[in-house]
Image (cartoon, rainbow, N blue to C red):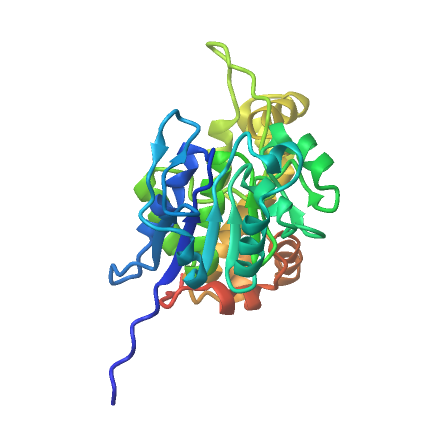
Length: 331
């Protein structure tokens, strides 16, 4: 019997255009490039290219010299477009014809990902027409004006539209890359990458990308302790009154403070945390769906199915078959 072939490494090409955002150039290498399987084998190979293999200017006042030119895009499984600034795609909605042709050709074979204002590049190439997308909130009005045919959602952290994904500001690019790892290889792999980089392992793509948070004065009591308390009790039927009582606030004050600190209502936040827990249990354990529903605080399979479908568009069993890792254990 022939030995089992090693899984093929996913090829990622980062296209560094002129006037690129320095911080975002290295995100794919840092996050996708550090994803490994249970045996420690890399799951992605990340390479950076400029169009001609020459240096490109960055937003940080220095130029970078990628090791590759755009020819590596022809064999890429995923192409990442970091944010840009002061280019024609952001001022008049155009790109050089050769770049548009390149992107349109590559998009027929590769998954396209933009970070922050990289969405302007995809928009100018026509790759977002009729699709949902997002970009940095500061540039959303310009984006909507230049690309009215795109279904822009300026409030979310990222949008996954299958073979085309867009993220908001540069830190939201981290959320999107971790989402890609979860989508490709499951939660456990993504969580390992997040721990290594000391970042939050999961922020829902629908979370608001910009929330005004007042600076707390000394002696102010926030809701963080209550959120931590609630995370240990997701299986319980927590109510707004329970949360407010734990925080020693009136329901009205708690509701206001909670939204100021998280950008969400307490009810929506609880649902998000329960969905996240259900996803982890479905991916990483063999626990029956009925028990997952109870452990995550949904009570019934029907309730969990409704919330999971609303959040990610699939039923629990479908999610388990699609996204669970190769090894699972029962609770």
